[in-house]
Image (cartoon, rainbow, N blue to C red; front, side, top):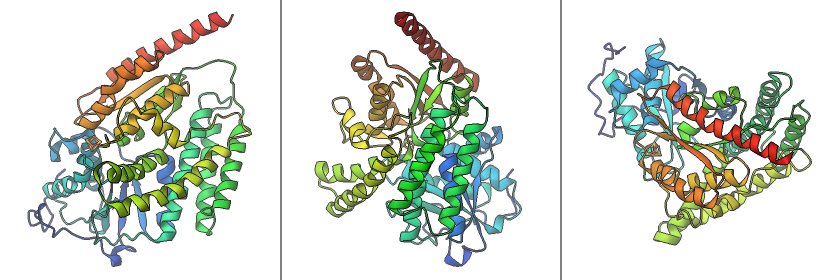
Length: 435
Ligand code: SF4
Protein backbone atom coordinates (compact mmCIF):
# COMPACT_ATOMS: atom_id res chain seq x y z
CA UNK A 1 0.00 0.00 0.00
CA UNK A 2 1.54 3.27 -1.04
CA UNK A 3 0.93 6.30 1.13
CA UNK A 4 -0.06 8.90 -1.46
CA UNK A 5 -1.24 11.35 1.18
CA UNK A 6 2.26 12.20 2.31
CA UNK A 7 2.45 16.00 2.13
CA UNK A 8 6.14 16.14 1.41
CA UNK A 9 6.38 13.20 -0.95
CA UNK A 10 9.13 13.76 -3.54
CA UNK A 11 10.43 16.75 -1.62
CA UNK A 12 13.13 14.87 0.27
CA UNK A 13 16.20 14.10 -1.76
CA UNK A 14 17.79 10.86 -0.51
CA UNK A 15 21.22 12.07 -1.50
CA UNK A 16 20.92 15.32 0.40
CA UNK A 17 21.73 15.55 4.08
CA UNK A 18 18.50 17.35 4.79
CA UNK A 19 16.74 14.28 6.08
CA UNK A 20 14.15 14.41 8.86
CA UNK A 21 15.90 14.23 12.20
CA UNK A 22 14.96 12.48 15.40
CA UNK A 23 15.10 15.40 17.81
CA UNK A 24 15.35 15.44 21.57
CA UNK A 25 11.77 16.73 21.96
CA UNK A 26 10.46 13.66 20.08
CA UNK A 27 11.79 11.24 22.72
CA UNK A 28 8.60 11.34 24.77
CA UNK A 29 6.10 11.62 21.91
CA UNK A 30 7.41 9.29 19.18
CA UNK A 31 7.48 5.48 19.08
CA UNK A 32 10.79 4.03 17.92
CA UNK A 33 10.35 0.95 15.70
CA UNK A 34 13.19 -1.56 15.93
CA UNK A 35 13.69 -4.73 13.82
CA UNK A 36 13.65 -7.95 15.82
CA UNK A 37 16.90 -9.83 15.37
CA UNK A 38 17.42 -11.77 18.60
CA UNK A 39 14.19 -12.20 20.60
CA UNK A 40 15.80 -12.57 24.06
CA UNK A 41 18.28 -9.73 23.62
CA UNK A 42 15.76 -7.48 21.94
CA UNK A 43 13.20 -7.90 24.72
CA UNK A 44 15.83 -6.89 27.27
CA UNK A 45 16.92 -3.94 25.13
CA UNK A 46 13.28 -2.89 24.61
CA UNK A 47 12.82 -2.79 28.39
CA UNK A 48 16.06 -0.85 28.93
CA UNK A 49 15.12 1.80 26.37
CA UNK A 50 11.64 2.13 27.85
CA UNK A 51 13.20 2.67 31.28
CA UNK A 52 15.44 5.36 29.74
CA UNK A 53 12.33 7.28 28.68
CA UNK A 54 12.05 6.15 25.04
CA UNK A 55 8.83 4.75 23.58
CA UNK A 56 9.94 1.57 21.85
CA UNK A 57 8.28 -1.12 19.76
CA UNK A 58 10.09 -4.21 18.49
CA UNK A 59 8.60 -5.11 15.11
CA UNK A 60 7.16 -8.61 15.02
CA UNK A 61 5.21 -8.40 11.75
CA UNK A 62 6.03 -11.22 9.32
CA UNK A 63 4.44 -12.85 6.28
CA UNK A 64 4.63 -12.52 2.48
CA UNK A 65 3.79 -8.78 2.57
CA UNK A 66 7.17 -8.05 4.15
CA UNK A 67 9.07 -9.50 1.18
CA UNK A 68 6.62 -7.94 -1.30
CA UNK A 69 7.13 -4.47 0.18
CA UNK A 70 10.89 -5.01 0.24
CA UNK A 71 10.94 -6.01 -3.41
CA UNK A 72 8.79 -3.02 -4.30
CA UNK A 73 11.10 -0.40 -2.84
CA UNK A 74 14.58 -1.96 -2.86
CA UNK A 75 16.49 -3.14 -5.92
CA UNK A 76 16.39 -6.93 -6.09
CA UNK A 77 20.20 -7.04 -6.30
CA UNK A 78 20.40 -5.68 -2.76
CA UNK A 79 21.42 -7.88 0.16
CA UNK A 80 18.47 -9.95 1.35
CA UNK A 81 18.73 -8.70 5.00
CA UNK A 82 18.33 -5.10 3.79
CA UNK A 83 15.38 -6.04 1.61
CA UNK A 84 13.70 -7.82 4.52
CA UNK A 85 14.29 -5.13 7.14
CA UNK A 86 13.13 -2.34 4.82
CA UNK A 87 10.12 -4.43 3.75
CA UNK A 88 9.26 -5.05 7.41
CA UNK A 89 9.45 -1.32 8.23
CA UNK A 90 7.21 -0.36 5.31
CA UNK A 91 4.74 -3.19 5.97
CA UNK A 92 4.57 -2.06 9.60
CA UNK A 93 4.01 1.58 8.61
CA UNK A 94 1.27 0.53 6.17
CA UNK A 95 -0.75 -0.75 9.11
CA UNK A 96 -0.30 2.17 11.51
CA UNK A 97 -2.38 5.24 12.17
CA UNK A 98 0.23 7.17 14.19
CA UNK A 99 2.54 7.88 11.25
CA UNK A 100 3.38 11.38 12.47
CA UNK A 101 4.60 9.91 15.74
CA UNK A 102 7.01 7.17 14.64
CA UNK A 103 10.75 6.94 14.22
CA UNK A 104 12.65 4.03 12.67
CA UNK A 105 15.83 2.69 14.22
CA UNK A 106 18.34 0.68 12.28
CA UNK A 107 21.61 -0.84 13.51
CA UNK A 108 24.76 -0.49 11.44
CA UNK A 109 28.22 -1.95 11.80
CA UNK A 110 29.89 0.88 9.91
CA UNK A 111 32.28 -1.51 8.20
CA UNK A 112 33.23 -1.78 4.56
CA UNK A 113 30.36 -3.96 3.35
CA UNK A 114 26.91 -2.82 2.31
CA UNK A 115 25.53 -2.78 5.87
CA UNK A 116 26.85 0.79 6.09
CA UNK A 117 24.46 1.78 3.29
CA UNK A 118 21.29 0.35 4.80
CA UNK A 119 20.41 3.71 6.30
CA UNK A 120 20.42 5.46 2.93
CA UNK A 121 18.62 2.57 1.26
CA UNK A 122 15.92 2.82 3.91
CA UNK A 123 15.55 6.59 3.51
CA UNK A 124 15.29 6.20 -0.26
CA UNK A 125 12.66 3.45 0.10
CA UNK A 126 10.68 5.57 2.57
CA UNK A 127 10.54 8.47 0.12
CA UNK A 128 9.36 6.16 -2.67
CA UNK A 129 6.69 4.69 -0.40
CA UNK A 130 5.49 8.14 0.65
CA UNK A 131 6.97 8.05 4.13
CA UNK A 132 9.91 10.39 3.51
CA UNK A 133 8.91 12.55 6.47
CA UNK A 134 9.58 9.77 9.01
CA UNK A 135 12.91 10.17 10.83
CA UNK A 136 15.39 7.31 10.81
CA UNK A 137 17.94 6.78 13.58
CA UNK A 138 21.16 4.88 13.07
CA UNK A 139 22.46 2.87 16.02
CA UNK A 140 26.14 2.31 15.35
CA UNK A 141 29.54 2.37 16.98
CA UNK A 142 31.21 4.21 14.12
CA UNK A 143 29.76 7.67 14.62
CA UNK A 144 27.97 7.44 11.26
CA UNK A 145 25.33 10.01 12.29
CA UNK A 146 26.28 12.65 14.78
CA UNK A 147 23.04 14.64 14.98
CA UNK A 148 20.59 12.09 16.33
CA UNK A 149 18.36 12.71 19.35
CA UNK A 150 19.27 9.21 20.44
CA UNK A 151 21.90 9.69 23.12
CA UNK A 152 24.36 7.13 24.40
CA UNK A 153 24.89 7.79 28.08
CA UNK A 154 27.40 5.70 30.09
CA UNK A 155 24.46 4.29 32.05
CA UNK A 156 22.78 3.16 28.84
CA UNK A 157 25.98 1.61 27.45
CA UNK A 158 26.62 -0.39 30.65
CA UNK A 159 23.03 -1.64 30.59
CA UNK A 160 23.27 -2.63 26.93
CA UNK A 161 26.51 -4.57 27.48
CA UNK A 162 24.94 -6.30 30.50
CA UNK A 163 21.82 -7.10 28.42
CA UNK A 164 23.97 -8.72 25.72
CA UNK A 165 25.85 -10.72 28.38
CA UNK A 166 22.61 -12.01 29.90
CA UNK A 167 21.02 -12.48 26.47
CA UNK A 168 23.89 -14.67 25.23
CA UNK A 169 23.93 -16.77 28.38
CA UNK A 170 20.15 -17.26 28.27
CA UNK A 171 20.21 -18.14 24.56
CA UNK A 172 23.00 -20.68 25.14
CA UNK A 173 21.26 -22.32 28.11
CA UNK A 174 17.87 -22.35 26.37
CA UNK A 175 19.39 -24.08 23.33
CA UNK A 176 21.16 -26.60 25.57
CA UNK A 177 17.88 -27.56 27.28
CA UNK A 178 14.89 -27.17 24.99
CA UNK A 179 15.43 -30.30 22.88
CA UNK A 180 15.77 -32.49 25.97
CA UNK A 181 13.09 -31.03 28.27
CA UNK A 182 10.75 -33.56 29.88
CA UNK A 183 7.91 -31.10 30.43
CA UNK A 184 7.17 -29.20 27.25
CA UNK A 185 7.48 -25.44 27.72
CA UNK A 186 9.66 -25.55 30.86
CA UNK A 187 12.68 -24.02 29.11
CA UNK A 188 10.67 -21.19 27.59
CA UNK A 189 8.98 -20.43 30.91
CA UNK A 190 12.35 -20.27 32.68
CA UNK A 191 13.86 -18.08 29.95
CA UNK A 192 10.89 -15.68 30.20
CA UNK A 193 11.17 -15.60 33.99
CA UNK A 194 14.82 -14.55 33.73
CA UNK A 195 14.09 -11.87 31.13
CA UNK A 196 11.51 -10.45 33.55
CA UNK A 197 13.87 -10.68 36.54
CA UNK A 198 16.74 -8.93 34.77
CA UNK A 199 14.45 -6.20 33.41
CA UNK A 200 13.12 -5.60 36.91
CA UNK A 201 16.67 -5.30 38.26
CA UNK A 202 17.61 -2.82 35.51
CA UNK A 203 14.57 -0.74 36.41
CA UNK A 204 15.68 -0.64 40.05
CA UNK A 205 19.31 0.32 39.30
CA UNK A 206 20.71 -3.20 39.68
CA UNK A 207 22.05 -5.88 37.37
CA UNK A 208 24.88 -4.02 35.63
CA UNK A 209 27.73 -4.15 38.15
CA UNK A 210 30.36 -6.89 37.98
CA UNK A 211 29.06 -8.33 41.25
CA UNK A 212 25.41 -8.36 40.11
CA UNK A 213 26.25 -9.94 36.76
CA UNK A 214 28.29 -12.64 38.50
CA UNK A 215 25.43 -13.44 40.89
CA UNK A 216 22.74 -13.42 38.21
CA UNK A 217 24.70 -15.60 35.80
CA UNK A 218 25.43 -18.09 38.56
CA UNK A 219 21.74 -18.31 39.60
CA UNK A 220 20.65 -18.50 35.98
CA UNK A 221 22.90 -21.50 35.30
CA UNK A 222 21.77 -23.17 38.51
CA UNK A 223 18.10 -22.77 37.51
CA UNK A 224 18.65 -24.25 34.07
CA UNK A 225 20.75 -27.04 35.58
CA UNK A 226 17.77 -27.98 37.74
CA UNK A 227 15.41 -28.30 34.74
CA UNK A 228 14.17 -31.84 34.19
CA UNK A 229 15.90 -33.11 31.05
CA UNK A 230 15.95 -36.47 29.32
CA UNK A 231 19.54 -36.98 28.25
CA UNK A 232 19.26 -40.73 27.64
CA UNK A 233 19.45 -40.45 23.82
CA UNK A 234 22.05 -38.76 21.68
CA UNK A 235 20.59 -36.16 19.34
CA UNK A 236 22.19 -34.43 16.34
CA UNK A 237 24.06 -31.32 17.41
CA UNK A 238 23.67 -28.51 14.89
CA UNK A 239 25.48 -25.17 14.83
CA UNK A 240 24.17 -22.14 12.95
CA UNK A 241 26.56 -19.59 11.44
CA UNK A 242 26.28 -17.00 8.69
CA UNK A 243 25.48 -13.37 8.05
CA UNK A 244 24.44 -11.80 11.35
CA UNK A 245 20.80 -10.99 10.49
CA UNK A 246 20.03 -14.23 8.67
CA UNK A 247 21.82 -16.22 11.38
CA UNK A 248 19.73 -14.79 14.22
CA UNK A 249 16.45 -13.41 12.88
CA UNK A 250 13.59 -15.88 12.54
CA UNK A 251 12.16 -13.63 9.82
CA UNK A 252 15.40 -13.99 7.85
CA UNK A 253 15.99 -17.72 8.27
CA UNK A 254 12.39 -18.93 8.17
CA UNK A 255 12.38 -19.88 11.87
CA UNK A 256 15.42 -22.11 11.47
CA UNK A 257 15.96 -22.73 15.21
CA UNK A 258 12.33 -23.81 15.72
CA UNK A 259 12.57 -26.10 12.72
CA UNK A 260 15.73 -27.77 14.03
CA UNK A 261 14.17 -28.30 17.46
CA UNK A 262 11.08 -29.80 15.78
CA UNK A 263 13.46 -32.23 14.06
CA UNK A 264 14.85 -33.29 17.45
CA UNK A 265 18.21 -31.57 17.06
CA UNK A 266 20.23 -29.66 19.67
CA UNK A 267 21.02 -26.18 18.37
CA UNK A 268 23.99 -23.94 19.06
CA UNK A 269 23.98 -20.37 17.76
CA UNK A 270 27.18 -18.48 18.65
CA UNK A 271 26.30 -15.37 20.67
CA UNK A 272 26.28 -11.68 19.88
CA UNK A 273 29.10 -11.07 22.36
CA UNK A 274 31.49 -12.78 19.93
CA UNK A 275 30.43 -10.43 17.12
CA UNK A 276 31.12 -7.37 19.29
CA UNK A 277 34.53 -8.71 20.32
CA UNK A 278 35.24 -9.41 16.63
CA UNK A 279 34.46 -5.75 15.78
CA UNK A 280 36.84 -4.46 18.49
CA UNK A 281 39.59 -6.90 17.48
CA UNK A 282 39.22 -5.60 13.93
CA UNK A 283 40.03 -2.07 15.12
CA UNK A 284 43.30 -3.42 16.49
CA UNK A 285 44.06 -5.35 13.28
CA UNK A 286 43.26 -2.22 11.26
CA UNK A 287 46.02 -0.41 13.08
CA UNK A 288 48.48 -3.33 13.05
CA UNK A 289 47.98 -4.23 9.39
CA UNK A 290 47.13 -0.91 7.76
CA UNK A 291 48.30 1.71 10.30
CA UNK A 292 44.70 2.96 10.63
CA UNK A 293 43.41 4.92 13.67
CA UNK A 294 45.82 4.35 16.56
CA UNK A 295 43.43 5.99 19.04
CA UNK A 296 40.57 3.62 18.15
CA UNK A 297 42.92 0.67 18.50
CA UNK A 298 43.83 1.79 22.05
CA UNK A 299 40.17 2.34 23.00
CA UNK A 300 39.30 -1.09 21.60
CA UNK A 301 41.97 -2.71 23.76
CA UNK A 302 40.37 -1.19 26.83
CA UNK A 303 36.84 -2.25 25.77
CA UNK A 304 38.12 -5.77 25.07
CA UNK A 305 39.56 -5.92 28.58
CA UNK A 306 36.20 -4.80 30.02
CA UNK A 307 34.18 -7.28 27.96
CA UNK A 308 36.56 -10.19 28.53
CA UNK A 309 36.05 -9.90 32.28
CA UNK A 310 32.34 -10.44 31.73
CA UNK A 311 33.06 -13.24 29.27
CA UNK A 312 34.94 -15.05 32.05
CA UNK A 313 31.89 -14.69 34.29
CA UNK A 314 29.70 -16.27 31.61
CA UNK A 315 31.98 -19.31 31.52
CA UNK A 316 32.61 -19.55 35.25
CA UNK A 317 28.89 -19.56 36.01
CA UNK A 318 28.62 -22.95 34.26
CA UNK A 319 31.46 -24.55 36.20
CA UNK A 320 29.44 -26.71 38.59
CA UNK A 321 26.66 -27.54 36.16
CA UNK A 322 26.22 -30.19 33.48
CA UNK A 323 26.70 -27.59 30.74
CA UNK A 324 29.96 -27.27 28.84
CA UNK A 325 30.92 -23.59 28.93
CA UNK A 326 31.36 -21.76 25.65
CA UNK A 327 34.95 -21.12 24.51
CA UNK A 328 36.91 -18.01 25.31
CA UNK A 329 36.68 -15.75 22.28
CA UNK A 330 40.46 -15.47 21.93
CA UNK A 331 40.54 -19.25 21.45
CA UNK A 332 37.79 -19.09 18.79
CA UNK A 333 39.67 -16.27 17.07
CA UNK A 334 42.89 -18.30 16.90
CA UNK A 335 41.06 -21.22 15.31
CA UNK A 336 40.66 -19.32 12.04
CA UNK A 337 44.43 -19.00 11.68
CA UNK A 338 45.70 -21.04 8.77
CA UNK A 339 42.24 -21.01 7.17
CA UNK A 340 41.45 -17.30 6.76
CA UNK A 341 43.55 -14.27 7.59
CA UNK A 342 42.36 -11.82 10.25
CA UNK A 343 42.63 -9.03 7.68
CA UNK A 344 39.48 -10.49 6.04
CA UNK A 345 36.88 -8.52 7.89
CA UNK A 346 34.07 -7.50 5.56
CA UNK A 347 30.71 -8.68 6.85
CA UNK A 348 31.26 -11.49 9.36
CA UNK A 349 34.74 -12.01 7.87
CA UNK A 350 37.11 -14.29 9.76
CA UNK A 351 34.57 -14.70 12.56
CA UNK A 352 32.37 -16.87 10.35
CA UNK A 353 35.29 -19.20 9.63
CA UNK A 354 36.38 -19.20 13.28
CA UNK A 355 32.85 -20.08 14.45
CA UNK A 356 32.64 -23.04 12.07
CA UNK A 357 36.00 -24.31 13.37
CA UNK A 358 34.88 -23.78 16.96
CA UNK A 359 31.53 -25.54 16.51
CA UNK A 360 33.24 -28.55 14.93
CA UNK A 361 35.75 -28.67 17.78
CA UNK A 362 32.89 -28.52 20.31
CA UNK A 363 31.07 -31.49 18.77
CA UNK A 364 28.58 -29.47 16.72
CA UNK A 365 30.03 -30.86 13.51
CA UNK A 366 26.69 -30.46 11.71
CA UNK A 367 26.69 -26.85 10.61
CA UNK A 368 24.22 -24.72 8.71
CA UNK A 369 25.84 -21.75 7.04
CA UNK A 370 23.05 -19.25 6.38
CA UNK A 371 23.91 -17.33 3.21
CA UNK A 372 21.81 -14.32 2.19
CA UNK A 373 21.40 -13.36 -1.43
CA UNK A 374 23.72 -10.56 -2.45
CA UNK A 375 26.29 -11.19 0.28
CA UNK A 376 29.72 -11.51 -1.26
CA UNK A 377 31.74 -11.47 2.03
CA UNK A 378 29.81 -14.40 3.46
CA UNK A 379 30.17 -16.47 0.33
CA UNK A 380 33.93 -16.04 0.65
CA UNK A 381 34.25 -16.53 4.41
CA UNK A 382 31.51 -19.19 4.59
CA UNK A 383 31.13 -21.27 1.43
CA UNK A 384 34.64 -20.40 0.32
CA UNK A 385 36.39 -22.03 3.30
CA UNK A 386 34.22 -25.13 3.71
CA UNK A 387 36.58 -27.34 1.71
CA UNK A 388 39.52 -26.31 3.88
CA UNK A 389 37.56 -26.88 7.11
CA UNK A 390 36.50 -30.33 5.92
CA UNK A 391 40.16 -31.14 5.23
CA UNK A 392 41.06 -30.24 8.81
CA UNK A 393 37.93 -31.74 10.41
CA UNK A 394 36.93 -34.81 8.42
CA UNK A 395 33.75 -35.16 10.49
CA UNK A 396 32.44 -31.70 9.53
CA UNK A 397 28.99 -31.99 7.94
CA UNK A 398 28.44 -28.45 6.65
CA UNK A 399 25.63 -27.29 4.43
CA UNK A 400 25.23 -23.79 2.96
CA UNK A 401 21.61 -22.70 2.76
CA UNK A 402 20.71 -19.76 0.55
CA UNK A 403 18.12 -17.24 1.72
CA UNK A 404 16.57 -14.98 -0.88
CA UNK A 405 13.10 -13.75 -1.87
CA UNK A 406 12.54 -16.62 -4.29
CA UNK A 407 13.96 -19.45 -2.14
CA UNK A 408 11.19 -21.68 -0.82
CA UNK A 409 11.04 -22.81 2.79
CA UNK A 410 10.32 -26.39 1.65
CA UNK A 411 13.49 -26.48 -0.39
CA UNK A 412 15.59 -25.06 2.45
CA UNK A 413 14.12 -27.53 4.95
CA UNK A 414 14.62 -30.49 2.63
CA UNK A 415 18.32 -29.70 2.32
CA UNK A 416 18.58 -29.40 6.11
CA UNK A 417 16.76 -32.71 6.54
CA UNK A 418 19.35 -34.33 4.29
CA UNK A 419 22.11 -32.99 6.52
CA UNK A 420 20.26 -34.24 9.62
CA UNK A 421 19.85 -37.69 8.03
CA UNK A 422 23.64 -37.95 7.76
CA UNK A 423 24.00 -36.77 11.38
CA UNK A 424 21.46 -39.33 12.64
CA UNK A 425 23.13 -42.10 10.65
CA UNK A 426 26.45 -41.23 12.30
CA UNK A 427 24.88 -41.39 15.77
CA UNK A 428 23.57 -44.87 14.96
CA UNK A 429 27.04 -45.95 13.77
CA UNK A 430 28.61 -44.56 16.96
CA UNK A 431 26.07 -46.43 19.11
CA UNK A 432 26.81 -49.67 17.27
CA UNK A 433 30.55 -49.14 17.71
CA UNK A 434 30.03 -48.54 21.44
CA UNK A 435 28.02 -51.75 21.76
S1 SF4 B 1 27.34 -8.89 5.40
FE1 SF4 B 1 26.58 -9.46 3.40
S2 SF4 B 1 24.37 -9.32 3.54
FE2 SF4 B 1 25.21 -8.18 5.27
S3 SF4 B 1 25.39 -6.09 4.47
FE3 SF4 B 1 27.36 -7.05 4.12
S4 SF4 B 1 27.21 -7.80 2.02
FE4 SF4 B 1 25.14 -7.39 2.70
